[in-house]
Length: 252
Image (tube, rainbow, N blue to C red):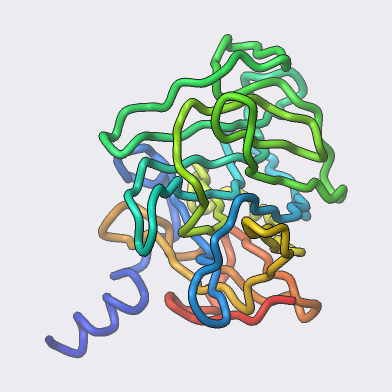
């Protein structure tokens, strides 16, 4: 491998700092994978606190989410799909704010679920109207529901997804941004990452690992996930990237 290819593999290729992301879904995404001390615990609930630090100022979708895979069986288990829940800056919902809980099965098809008690301006089963404000922390959680796996924001249940599994795995939080790479910067902060095990114990990841959508895959190169100095991580758009891919950030 040439030195150029080594650099591209680490930093996601040549730069893209202007224009809309040309990725298949039109977004630039960056992720924080949870890391545990020792083996991944058998989790039946995960949670993270999300604060929108600098709200978007453009009328393009921004999605900030907690994600988990649904697993059945001992060992590495059988993957039944995954789900993601979080807040959205969504210009087509009242006030431009919404909440989402959706996912996909192992076959790639969108998961069905129960009907949410929250209204939806677009009649979308996954995305519902919800008022949220910048600067206020919101607690996102994925946990067992009545009809499968549920998600909540500040103990308000969004709905259940109809999917099996006896535990959650491959936990991460992320930002998915449909704005132009050079649109005004926005930022969110992730804190208080935690999980609940089958026996009721509370566990916390020791760190997160950064991951960025590469330029080759349509991502922006001016996104960054950085420690805030207080045990949290800030994800920001349109900023010089100061934390490279696959960096490990301690959380507490």
